[in-house]
Image 1 (spheres, rainbow, N blue to C red):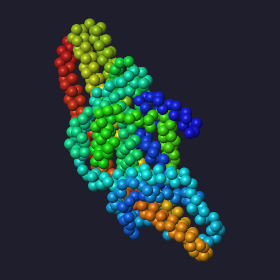
Image 2 (image 1 turned 180 degrees about the vertical axis):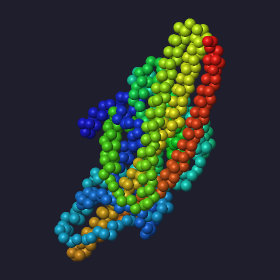
Image 3 (image 1 turned 180 degrees about the horizontal axis):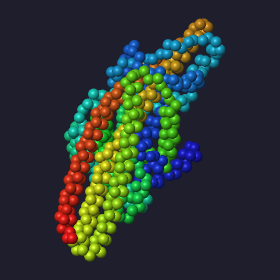
Length: 544
């Protein structure tokens, strides 16, 4: 263990701001993935999946990677070990057509080739490399198996109308820096895979983060769009921890977090595959404390690794470029980038509007106090009475302005922030597809190198045992390329299904929020008219 990991592990038992990550901003939540998945190397996507043997000759939609490594040592280490004693379950055959994609423009050269050392380099593998390959393959195989068992057409099922989740009654447990908040989660459902139709459990904020970590590690590599959890707020949580009694600021923070957590669970519940996930059902059903999620702690070793992994993924996204041959993905990538930019600009404008509402509320409060002071010193009785009523009117308008600012936040700002996070999840799904194609191209290069080497052995009349060994390795790699191609098509198909679902839900979310927002504004204006109409007789009663 490195010195950095030893230092970080000393903080594992420290609970800082309800296990909130001080290094993560509100817009980076969508990029938080499980440590087990983000460490999967690009070459580990090909797995030993039984029952995936379908092939076709159509490979026109497979894009060409421009940054595939050509170094022979790197390519020789891509060899995977076949675990022939595995007892894993067989997966369903993937419906999408697939075929190995072989580069046809590669040439064979007999110059500067060391035929004596090449077989040894191919046959000698570091055992640690094989162990790491097995672990990575098992992770991806489990993710692909789950995706195969949960059929894509299930995305069209209407689970949203069969489940309702509400969060209420935030309670503070303990005192001081070691305290934390728990929320009561009530679920009502008619879905058959839940054990009860009505259930109530209590969960803390770190439990929500742990749930997201499990969902993203299981469904993220398959191209699923997993909704991100609410943004962490170390400052807001610290205020709640250190407050002796319920203050207005703490109550406002807890109410906003309660609404955000409720929306997060409801978005997961509306997804047929995520809703049926055992971890999600356990989160809603198990009336007991969940195991502590240590990977969400800011100062744990996993937290430190997550920071470095996030930096590595960001660099890879910047440096990885791919010539996209599928026009659908090229169009949607541009669409999602434009949408992301526009929503962020709109969110900035809404936040500015909320700030102006707060300033207006403060000014109305000052105006009300100043008017009340003048009314006390006014010698004209009727004018003094009118000024007093005017001060009361301004107080009422101040409350309406505060409510309108809250509506701006709930119906506009939170809606936009949620979709910024969802767009980040979509970009992560697109990046998973890029990792699949990079892995596929690496395997194809390695396969071509082995075929070239076989041809060189045959031309130089080398011994039959060596040629037989190379033929076995070629056969093994052809299978791996075929499986990697199938996984690539599976991920691509899932992304298309998920994107279509995202588009439909996006329109529905904006429509519902706009309707509620306009209704709230109309109610505000009606109340404002009633307040001024009540003051009008007082103004007319001023005697001259």
